[in-house]
Image (cartoon, rainbow, N blue to C red; front, side):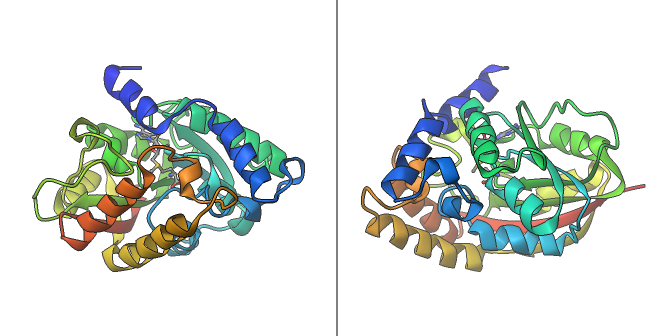
Length: 277
Ligand SMILES: C[S@@+](CC[C@H](N)C(=O)[O-])C[C@H]1O[C@@H](n2cnc3c(N)ncnc32)[C@H](O)[C@@H]1O
């Protein structure tokens, strides 16, 4: 792993995320030995729109039962488990943050979903799967951390079957003014690699990923951000919130994500591409 990849691992990873999650679940009155997927809803979908946007993107991309899906930047595996449990997909996840991958495996095993979802540590720009392995590639809120998106999209196209779909959500650059930091994907400027929506479109097309649909989701992500912030503000030691997996500066990161969107410094998009045959 290069210095850039290690920096991402340090940014998202903190020691013993798995132990912290289990302790937080117990404090919230859940039984860590008898976990259900719904017990994790407040912490395992680490992107602006939460589980509602995962469901919406899956419908938008036309995911159906039996599809093989790759989730790049899978975090602790919430979206992968949602796609498997609610859409019948078989999901592989890959993530640069080792502690997230460990937590994804541990939670998936406890919930009894290891036959439908597997996880591995690695870089989305260098995927360890053969050509044409997946019906769909999925990515939520990780493109902002990727300096060489052209290389990532070439890999996405390579592992997709011809006609396969790439479904994604991402923050993109807005007005061009500097963003407020720290935010969820970057504690400092070197970790943030935002491009405009137009630049993203060009990079996708150049990689052979034809854009079928691309929507601006900024307004709904702002609304969801206010709800999530209210939940964190209300939270006490017994409440599950995104603070469990973001132990440092969670309130500031939340405020900055909202300010960046509200001031037009960033925007958010969701899209579906088809791999050119
Ligand atoms: C904001 S989190 C989103 C996690 C997950 N997609 C979700 O929505 O719950 C971004 C994730 O992308 C991962 N990531 C960033 N760059 C990556 C790369 N080049 N390859 C794989 N994962 C990466 C980070 O480690 C982190 O887990």
